[in-house]
Image 1 (spheres, rainbow, N blue to C red):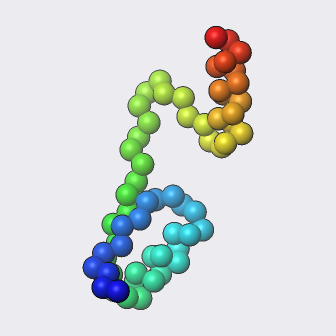
Image 2 (spheres, rainbow, N blue to C red):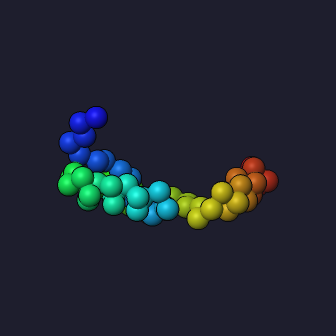
Length: 62
């Protein structure tokens, strides 16, 4: 394989470090894509459970 660049998302998970290590060892440039900022007033759930609770409240009030 001929890889010229690694493009990865900034997930902060355990899978990121090995990719970055491999790219560094192979001297491959890395592009990290970050999530854009959340617009003001848009609800954000920090976990799947929190998202389920939010959806439940949304349907209960509607």
